[in-house]
Length: 402
Image: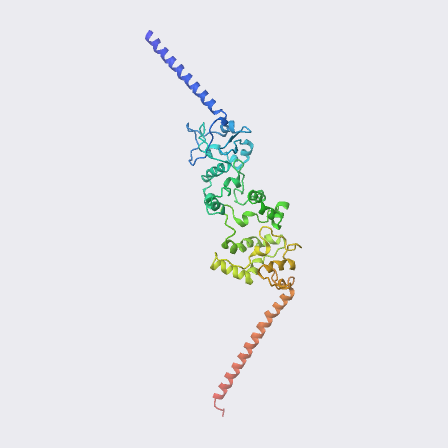
């Protein structure tokens, strides 16, 4: 009986010790999770895929926000830059990632445990460049397109400021750019694209803002007009200074200016490409593009006459090329000896009709009938003469009738 009581006492004592130990461990873990991050080492993005902590469970965003939801949270990098570590919960919840309930550690894969690994970035730009690697895991297709872009080429040459993913898309405020079903760019995104590009290309943006396209977009919110990506692309942005880009640039302009539904809304002719290709300038450029796409050519393409980012209305008194004096200035770039009546020989991009260049239209119409009649008449005369000769020779070969 005494021995049974002894064993019972041992079991109760052991159980009490185990419970006490578990309570102590839970309190230590809770205290560690609530430590001020400013007193700890901080995160560095890693290439791995794990999004779980050592217990095998995904760390919830609420755990991260216990520290990172504190406004003013920051650290000083080795070069003296101040890195803001505060994440606005509402901003993240409104982002495309937040709306799809992505956890912080699904991007910051090495931060599932605490304390965080040592922070390796030397300055703020280094932080951005390191975190860009996070995007590749989910967006490898888009990343592969950037490898041949002008931005990646600049990065490879040591230009750290060249744009990477988060420079354009943001980080915790990443928004939705396209309709999920149609994959078509959202109108709000089209309005914001020039502003996004202006963060690096501010001078070009100011020119675009004053152009016929840019003014329609920024002042009238007209999403029909082209934005940066319509001409330059999105992730696979080409170098616009190459001969190949120059030679194919008329096709970029034609993608909008040969669309009947789009051009009818603004009373613009869709004959621009056909009339350009039909004249000497366009024919030469087309041949170069097909035969020698990398060869330089001095024949004008659309932007040589109309401008690049500063395209104006053709009827603008100061710069519009519908005005003969303005067009002459453009012509003299290639034809320095051009006289004042030189531009008059060009019929713009209009095919002659009763409403446009009526005299040329009626002259063409006259010759459409006159030339066939003349040639047809000559053929008829020759035919009649040949027929008569055959008839005469045939008659001579026959014996006289009795």
